[in-house]
Length: 272
Image 1 (spheres, rainbow, N blue to C red):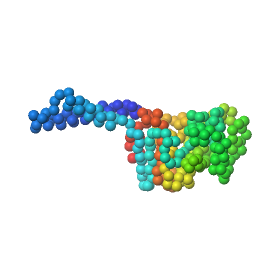
Image 2: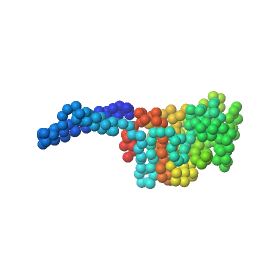
Image 3: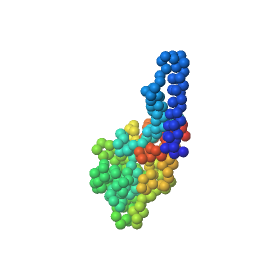
Image 4: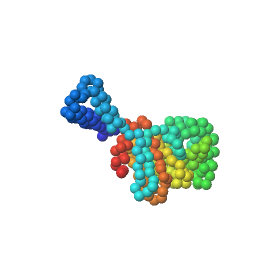
């Protein structure tokens, strides 16, 4: 059942249930206080409005849920929003070259492109300087390309960069076709990327909340529905948390456009 269908069902079921309960209470009170029995449009309107409010409260999609990881002191919050507007560290999926040139190499519509454009002010050279400094000790493969960076890093490589006092974890997720420059990733590469992300969180979070976007859903996505991507991210976080604590809390920030597609309440019940 889709989120919209479930919300509609809950609205009517809970709304009518509330109406029935309130009507029963009012009628019952009328037996004991016949002279005080409320009648007329005014009281009936109150009854209807109360039922509608109750239905909306029950049927409206949850904006956030929090899952406690069993046998640990860690948790993961799932919410809808803009990952760049959240407080704390932000994870940004990038390609294996850590390209910074907007256009053919990095789409402005991707999180990678939004970071370069809005956070770095579109300055690719400044972006490269930060990346090179962060990955100075990481071995890279030299690749002959017509354009773009020549350093190719393993999937899962994470560069921790500081911009205006805020940390960002740039994580290599996708591979780039040398001819078309199209970036793509597989489920295996998504898992490798997440593995690197959790290690990066261990190394650099220092107790800060880390905000993770819906990795794998962008232009270089792995081709899975959002619900499946959420499940993979949750499974990965639980798996690596069980091996070694990742963080006290991680926030998975989902695009607001998915609010009527993903049912957070049902998702939480499947994990509790």
